[in-house]
Amino acid sequence: MNNHIDVRIYESRKGMGAAAAERFAREVDRLLQFKEEINIVFAAAPSQNEFLHYLFEHNLKWHRINAFHMDEYIGLPADAPQGFGNFLKERLFSKYNFKSVHYLNGNAADIQSECLRYTGLLESHPVDIVCMGIGENGHLAFNDPPVADFEDTATVKMVFLDQACRLQQVNDGCFQHIDQVPVSALTLTIPALMKAQFISCVVPGSTKARAVRNTFEQEVCSEYPSTILTRHDNVVLYLDFESSSSLIS
Image (cartoon, rainbow, N blue to C red; front, top):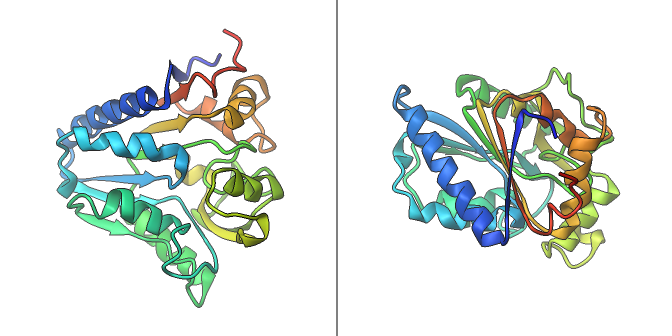
């Protein structure tokens, strides 16, 4: 395994989520010792549920945190529970007194202008921490293999979602049928995510086992987007028993 990724394996999703929340809290406290405020990008997915739940155990200075999310569907109804902003509002953003919360608008009249707006926010709030997962197809955020670009000059872009990505949303229970899953989305790019000082990557479940193994066994290439994590100096990868089942120690 690549030495740049600190791999932590737990017997259960609860243990994994609790550990990820504890390390996240320590990293937040460390950064706030020398920064007045910090900027954090959160992922919205069922894989993050345990991590988000166990944040309640930590008395963090949320009022010094600016929050962002890393992707959003294009064209869902504004109140759709599958919307990533809505997912995080329910489970995180409405629970704490953040300094600011910045939502991606997948229903903007001008999608390119929305990309530029969010890019400006990220440029004025350099990312300190990214909390992410890995998709079944190895994607980070919505950087699926066909559109992932490790040298992307954009910070936020519109993408079309590949079949494996859309099927994952059904497997996760977010949609009943693949025809209900939007075909396009907004996403932070790979370079935008990699700018973080610390990346917390929470990846439970048997459906992610192959993607986890590919992260370490494949060459670093956009066909396997998660392989880029091996090039970052400060990544902790949290796995449960099922998602770690394909790893060879």
